[in-house]
Image 1 (cartoon, rainbow, N blue to C red):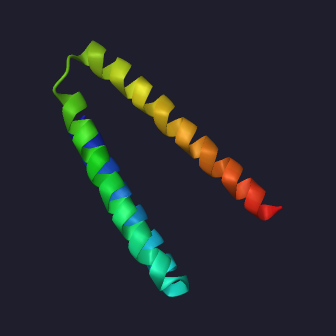
Image 2 (cartoon, rainbow, N blue to C red):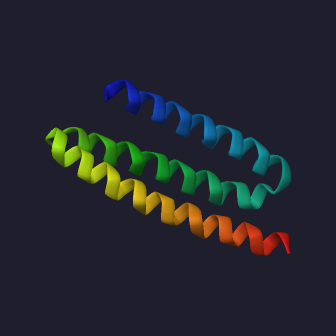
Image 3 (cartoon, rainbow, N blue to C red):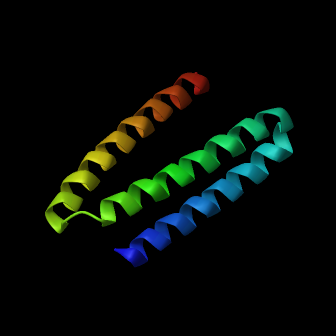
Length: 87
């Protein structure tokens, strides 16, 4: 679990860095807002995963499934918004 958490944290940091570079190049004003949001999201994710680690294995499974569902819904909202912007 610890290895998976480190991998997720690394992936999150990479995502933050990649997104940040793209936005800084294209829209500096928006970049500051997105950087802050991504950093807060990354920290929130780390806290959530650390909190889940302290639970029993059965409880971890339940919490991770619930968290996955929550994140999936957020991805769905983003996908819908992207589709609208493509029209």
